[in-house]
Length: 248
Image (cartoon, rainbow, N blue to C red; front, side):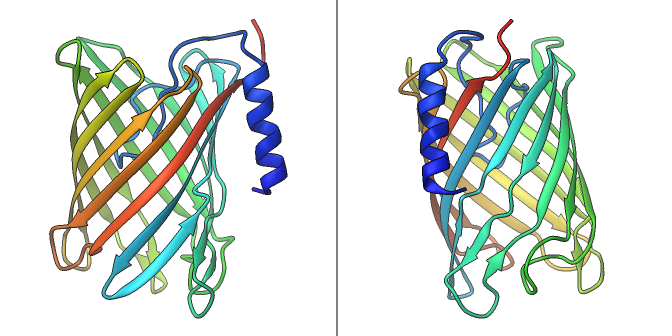
């Protein structure tokens, strides 16, 4: 996303203060997605940058842009803008474009639950793109434990293309989130990937988010790998905001 365009969107988001004033709920920075959709008529931008070290190799990627558009009270459309992976050299370039839909199924029996269906399209650079049309299914959930504590998690199945064939991957996550103040929270999360071919990838993840206004969020997160197949460690930052494009 070009800087001037991104700045224009931030200014628009600040000016349009009418509409749904519910606090922003993002799919970042945790691996676990939010268990709710964005409000109907809202367009939400979630962006960030991450520095990852794996097998002694360092990779920077960004802007990690996810666009979420609320089209009904419990339905949103999703667009994963291609991410750029660097630094420049072999294996650098843009990744694949992703499209999807999210349907909120809860709340039910104290749980918020959503179903996310997505498809990755082979639009990326050679060495970055999977080269295939890769579907995925995610089921994020959450439950409030008290006024300050929330438990959440996600069950997922991915069908990535690797070396020209599918490598079915199951993923499970679990986190505890603690509301620190009215405008900030912190979490600790476990994420595990279990692949058809290859060793399991276990990850321990920590993060925090600060919301200067109900429609904006700043985040910081770090993670460490717990198994040989996982990344060594990473650190990331992000900024998200919601813009009410349709006023009811």
